[in-house]
Image (cartoon, rainbow, N blue to C red; front, top):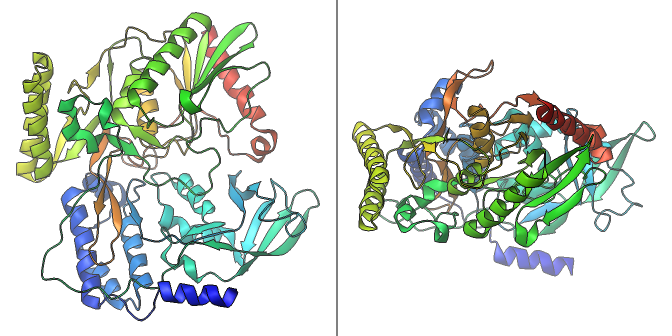
Length: 556
């Protein structure tokens, strides 16, 4: 049977052809031009990291030196990783994945095992336990492997990058790592057993699924130029007014690809266990949100989890959220909002929730947009359609101002000022009639990404409540997917804008700027879930700490 499978793979994935040097150079140039034309944060990356992604000479030299297609694809990865932008991503046309049946993440700065599939790795073969430390793989220390894998999972936050890279230790998709198919049949893992205090080695089989490729095949060269088509927006366009649909791709503010092994990422269930006496109200699923209440020291604390900002139906989710907020306003003394491990989503949905949490006029997130000609046309279409649909004159005025800003930036070959992408065209929003008016805190971590970066930023900028947790991922813009190359058929995510906050943010590690990109949202009160203690006790210590914080806010 094994011999038959090997023959099948060879038949499906022939290894007799590869891209020519000229095709590789062309593809790389097309990719770089896609960024030159569309990449919004370029000036910020130059300032923050002193990079020059438009100087192609050293990159083309690397491309010419590649010996095969997999090396070439890895150069593409190096190029996009140099931008240190988690919205920027490459996806290769591959289905091959190799897994080990357990996952690991960084707790207290160490790579600890946090889940094990006993079906894939039975106790007899792999007696390690959750909380044990993964030390090496095939003799290579895991910290070296994290350094090696970081480029495949680059984010705006150094720790989030390493945590994402930790997922690749035990899950290797070729859509992310071109050379993943070169893995052997087994790997020797070295584990520090916490219970016995011993270092043990185990030889574990990789479980391989999908079809691997070793080259991209022979591709004919056409005497045409590439077309930079972008893919449809992931935003729920049905919930948008017709005049907002020309801007739909700009409303997508979500991590392009979920991490391989971060527990409860994007889930309606929190990473921690509910406190004693917790009464569940919404349970995710059709409700989208999870929520409930619990009583501590005579105070009723409300809790709601926003798993992402990309519900199946934004309109239905907003109605659900509003009903729940009305209940919580009447029946609680304070509210905990959990946006940890939230991949982001729709700019419009994000703002709709904020309007039900901030009881006064507030300044929302703005966007500096890379003003391409296509966006000039789209903003013009928005303006003309808004007039056609009889939108109120004050909104029309904002749309006119935004269109003029985009047009002027396009003529100057740069980016706009800070503009609004919402249905009013204004950075100043008014609250919904149904709004939570009591004390609240927002829980964040380094996997609060994109729109989940923007959400706590607006709460913090407007003094609405304390942001509690760990610095967010720092993905501060929208993302549009392009057909990034021609011959290698690579899809690329490109950030076309920069989120702007009300005031510049001062940090010790990056230049002072009003951006979310790379800077992230720094918590008012730091509280890190990623400890071995929280891993083993389902976050009991974490829950006690944030409960104490909301009680203090209620008392104040």
